[in-house]
Length: 453
Image 1 (tube, rainbow, N blue to C red):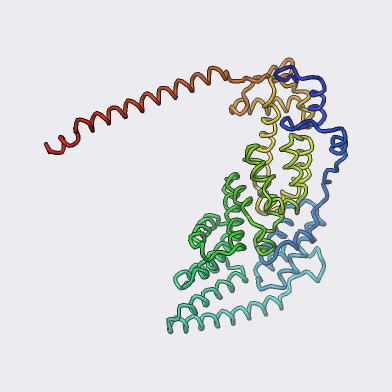
Image 2 (spheres, rainbow, N blue to C red):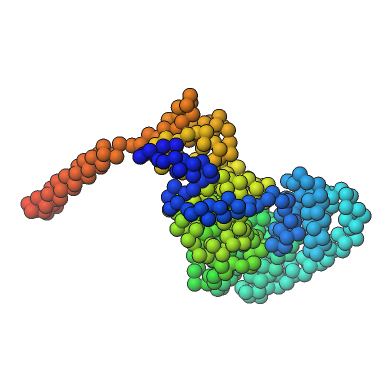
C-alpha cells in the first residue's frame, strides 16, 4: 500500500496488522499496541433471557418474549421465553394473548403451563363487569357535562382496552380525550398514551403525528417526557429507515429517561439503536462530535460496552476489531423486536463506510492486505469495491491482475480555477444587476410608469 509520498514499510505493516491503526491518529506506542491486541472481544454467548426481560415492563415485555421465541433457533431459549411470557400474562388480563402463548407452548412445559380455563373465564367475567361499570360512569359524566370527568372516563376506557389487548379500541379511547383536555399536561398525557398504543400496533405514522402534537406544548414538557418523545420519534424514523434522523433523536435522549419508559424501550436500546444508526449514516466529524464527545449519550453507551467499543474502533480505523464486535452482536440483534429488520441494511452501510474510509487517504491499496483487514476473500472484496465504485462512492479503479486499487484523485488545481471563475461570473452578474437598479431609480423609471397608468 503506497501513500502519496511512498509510505514507509513500517506504515504498511501497521495498516496490515489490524486494518488497523487510525490514519488520522498519531502512531500509538508499543505499550498501547500490546494492550490493543490483547483486548478481549465479546463472545457470541446466547442471550440471557431473564436479564433481557427484566429491562422491560407491561405489554412490550410479553411481546418481546414472544418475538424472541418465534425467531430463536434454540429450543431451550424458546421454551424459556414462552414460560416467562406465560407467567407474565397470568399477572394481567389479556386472555386472548394468553391462549396464543399456550398454543405456542403446545404442552412442552408440562401441565403447569397449559390452558387455565378457570382463570380465563374468571378474568373475562370480571372484564365484562368492569366494562359495564365504565360505560355507566361515562354516560353519567356525559349527562352532567363535566369535561374533566369525561376525559378521565375515556382514559379509563383506554387503559381497560389496552390491558385486554384491544389496541384499536384503546387508541380510539385515548384520542377521544383530546376534546376534553383542559390543560397542557392533559394533552401531553393523551399524546403519550396514543404513542404507546401506536408503537404496539406498529402504526408509526401515528407515532410521528402525536410526537409533533406533544412538542407543540413545550411549556408542559418535563425532561422525562421530552426523553420519551425523542425515543418514540427515534423508533418511528428507524421503522421508516431514516437512519440519520433516528440517530439524531436517540442521541438527543437525556439521562432523565432512566427506566421510566420500560413499557416501550430500555436505556440499552437507546445506546444500541442510536450507535448503529449513527455508524451507518454519520461522517467522521459527526461521529466524533455527536456520538463520541456526547456526554449524555456516553452514559447510555456505558450500559452496552460492546457498542461503545465498536464505535471507538470504527472511528480509530480498527476495522478488524470493529467488524468482530458487529459479528458477535448480530445474533442477539436479530432477536430484537424493533431493529431486526434493519440489521442487514445497517451492517452493509457500516461496512461500506469502513471500506471507503480505509481507502480514502491512499493513492494505491493492496487488495490482499485490505482483504485480510476486513476478514474476507480478495474476490469478495473486489466485488464490494466494484459496487462502491459503480455507485460513485469511491473514486478509484481496480487492477484485477495485480489486485491493486488505484485512487482517482480530482485535479485540485483545475477545480480551484473553476470555482474562482464561477465566483467571478456571479460577482459580475450581481454588479450589473445593482447598476441597472441604480439607473432605474436615478431616472425615476418606476414613478413615470405608474403615472402613465
